[in-house]
Amino acid sequence: MTKISIDLSWKLGDGKMTPGNYSNQHQITFTPNIKITGDSAPDWKGNELNSNPEQTLAASLSSCHMMTFLALAAKMNWPVLSYNDNAIATLGKNSKGQMSVIKLELNPIVKFSDKFSVNPDEMKKVQDRAHRYCFIANSLSEEVKVLIN
Image 1 (tube, helix red, strand yellow):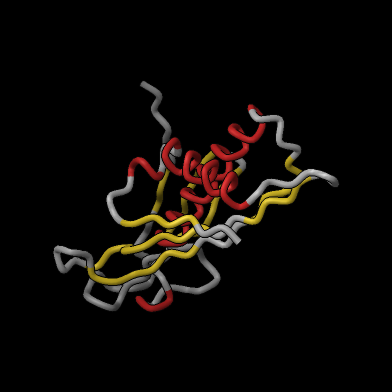
Image 2: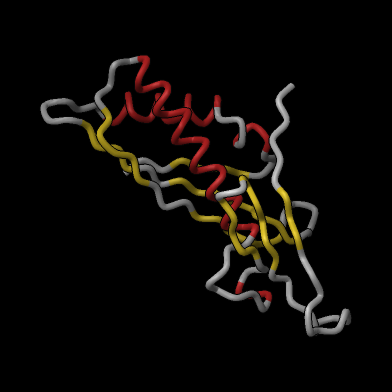
């Protein structure tokens, strides 16, 4: 079994540990060279200049889906030149009435080298396979949609 880890560090700072009087800003270290500042989403008084868990969840899913798609495309000799996505996390109440990410939406745009194209039905099949094989997608229990443009 492979274990993947991050380090997270938070300190109280100048606030007081009472409701609404402390910052959720924290450091997340992925590797010694990759660190981000995390926070709560702006709707929950977080700084919009920092990342938030909902964004990093969407980023994790988008990244995993892309890498899975690229692996499948390489096996089929598809000459992919670029892959872009705008992943959207929607917050709301789940079926248990709890706040959660109730939907994650991927919007991949794939560009191929000249003179190569894939019909929409074939692209949908491969994107669906990428979704089924994506480790992160398989770890989620709520709805995930992959929209093909």
